[in-house]
Image (cartoon, rainbow, N blue to C red; front, side):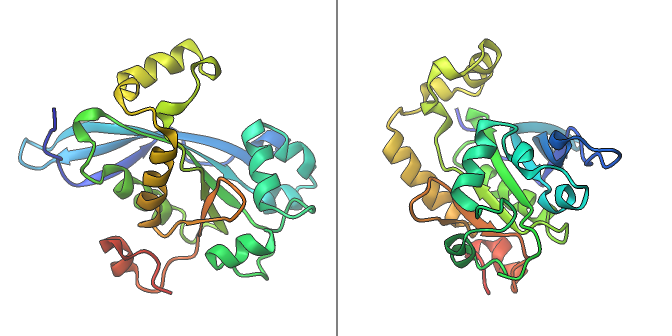
Length: 232
């Protein structure tokens, strides 16, 4: 059943800041989670939870300045190891040339800090209304001007995640979002997600599963919010 979408949309982080005092390697790769919230101005400003998101902020520059081992930083999780291998040079701090070219990141950037958008789940009654795209745009704009060079994501449909890789809690959560009811055709799902996230300015990096976008604010912010992608 479809539900009319309340407005406006906002994001509520469960945590917001990086720890910077005597950091360990893992402190420079912070996992952030949160909820997608909409306020119904016609119903006494009642709040509706539309979905959830999860991302990882990878502070390469901070780790280098603190003398932290980049090898230990990137080996923190398999997902980070895969991202580093696909997008970064052997020095583990600079982006590969084809990644820079794909999204227009300045080749002279000192260290390529990255935000990886890991998961976004929308409740069934709010799907098909552009909630995910609006949420991703809001997340992107949140990190403008915060010394981030790159945004990255893998356009992989969550309903195609193999059950053996999910904990019982994750399986229950996926069912609460109705993911088990979505089509299991992964190639079609990937193609749809690529087209969807391209509307927020993300481009495919050839030879990798990743889509990337520059973290610099677009020249025409109004056009970008309106759905025109990057206008640089």
